[in-house]
Every structure is written in C-alpha cells, then in structure tokens.
Length: 183
Image 1 (cartoon, rainbow, N blue to C red):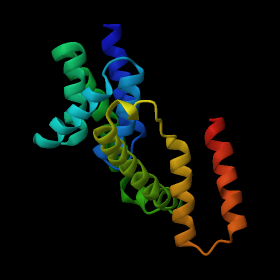
Image 2 (cartoon, rainbow, N blue to C red; image 1 turned 30 degrees about the horizontal axis):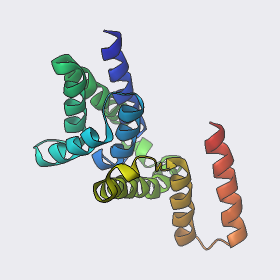
Image 3 (tube, helix red, strand yellow; image 1 turned 180 degrees about the horizontal axis):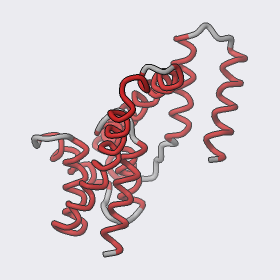
Image 4 (spheres, helix red, strand yellow; image 1 turned 180 degrees about the vertical axis):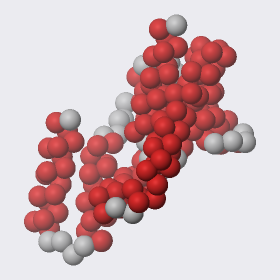
C-alpha cells in the first residue's frame, strides 16, 4: 500500500506542477519514473508512443500505463487519480472564485510568464525523445537542466515582449537563477 501511495504522490506532484498539458509532463514523468526505479527510459518512450496512439488525454494515458506496468490495476488507478486530482481541485477553486480571479493583473502576469516555460518543456520532451531514438544508450548519460531551460526561455520571452537591455536580461537571469536554484 505504501508503494501505491508513493506512486500516487509522484503523479500528484507531476499533475500539480506541470502546466501546458501532457507533452509538458514528459520530462517530469521521465525523471520521476526513471530516477525512482519504476521504469526504464525505453519503457517511458514506449509509453509515450502508446499514450499518443490511444484515445483520451495524453497525461491520463501515460499515468495509467505507467501505473499498470508498475503495480497492476491498482497502480493504474492510483497513478491516474494522482495526475487528474490536482487539475480537478484547481478547476473547482477557479470555478468557485469565478472569472474575476483569472482577470486579475497578478494572474495574467503569471500566465504570461508560464507560456515560454511551457514551450520549453514541450521542446525539451520532443528533443529528448528524438535524441534517445537516434542515439540510443549514448543518450542516457546526458541530462537536461530543466530549471536552466526555463530561465533561458523566460528571459528570451521577456526580451521579445519588452525592449530590455542586455544588462537587464543578465540581472533578471541572475535573480531567477538564484531564486529557483535555492528553492
């Protein structure tokens, strides 16, 4: 039962901290499932192909397949609940507080910063699958620093949205780096 709860928590965390849909979840699913010893990189890549080709939401399919492979039917139930529950709770809260919440300046600012990060996660997932498919086992030792990628894409997005000097961009990168790496 402890293993099922651990699987639930892994997918709950993935569902809670991933914005941008199922494809943005791929790097987190790969990291958590491979580093946790639940799946191999090849199995994750196979599940990506299976989840892509079956009907239904990609994230739910990935969680269901990974959970089933790890702990059978109960594993699929716990993993699927874990990945779906955060979105369900957040949508309930947003519906409760109405659309006034979405239209506030802080929420709009946060969402504008999340867009480049989501793009980076999706590109990272695609590049990772491509490199593993082409390079095979030579790719296993290469790791992406998702925090650095998120900082880079955020600063790149800011440079296009606002006319900032290189000094400002370096300072923003430094502040983001110190903040995110210290968390």
